[in-house]
Image (tube, rainbow, N blue to C red; front, side, top):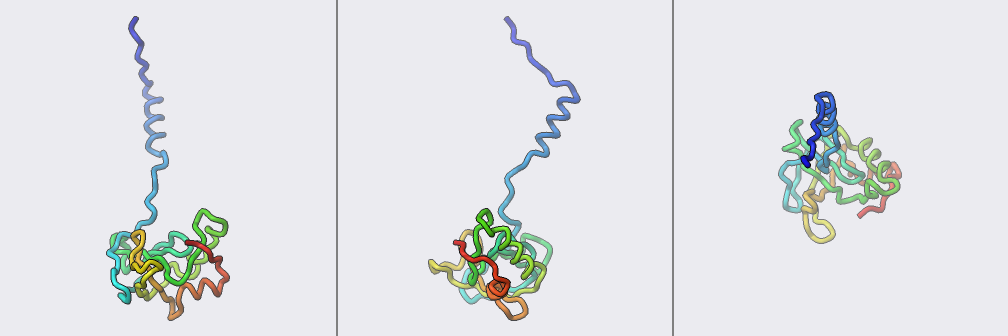
Length: 145
């Protein structure tokens, strides 16, 4: 007995092709791909171009994400994005920092490293005030990792 092969009709084939093309693909955590400062005390500045969560952002001087520096705020621990208040924390960081010019300084983290998980640990300031202080002034939830 010969098994029959089933061939999709042209409209069904187009529909299947379309369905595969719009299926969700894993997203990158962030678009920031710039070179990270590696020494404590190194200073950098630019515009906050991207906010990933309540204590992570990207700073860059151009619209090219390949030049953006990914920052983990040294002076503020926000809840994880998927935790209660995580989305609120991200929203507050966006309100405080997105589109703002910042001046940042790399710092050592808890384990003595300046770079952790492909992010530089830094204190960033908007108009001379640290973003951590600005978030606390807005009563942003704390308590992340």
